Picture 1 (cartoon, rainbow over the protein chains, first blue to last red):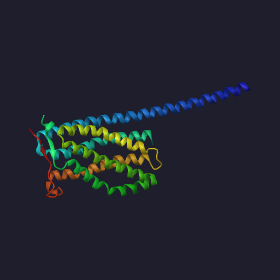
Picture 2: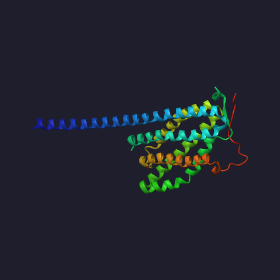
Picture 3: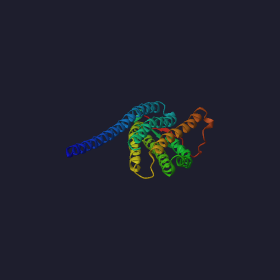
Picture 4: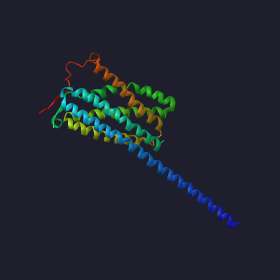
Length: 98
Length: 155
């Protein structure tokens, strides 16, 4: 009888440990997924902003008289492109902290 | 080569656009607070306010960086735009990281407000800018004393 009791206790202990490990694994996977989501979401806007600013600088250098207009549209373009990164960031904070 | 020596003199157009957006955004803060309070109570109102402030500060910082760089050279604008992008993403991350464990923070309203405010203000401003570019007569009048932005330093 005591052997049965000790086996049952060991089984319960093992199950609790396995559950703990599963929780740990889930938390680790969640954290790394959130990090990947944020990192990957920042790549596209980075490329977009680089291209946008490169073209805008080229336009300003070619036509300095329209530099003001080009800078206005460039600023709005940068902000719009950055919205993509912000969406990635929001997904990150929702996955990680919410 | 000219991009390395050319610079923009006069008021920064980016700063003007950003200040315009702040002027439009600030009156919306109480509205956002009320909407946040309706959906998520006190925590929602506080989180919405924090997110709206974050968006406005982000836009002003972006414009300030670009305006500062435009006075150096157009090439500096490119550096400031990309460096500023990374810097501001880091600052937003830090700003959210600092408050994440505070009792008044509700992450869902904060996240939704970040996106909605940012996109909403931009769309609103874009309509204004595109209208004034297509029809210059609609453009708000600037004071006569205010200098216009001009490119300088071309060789």
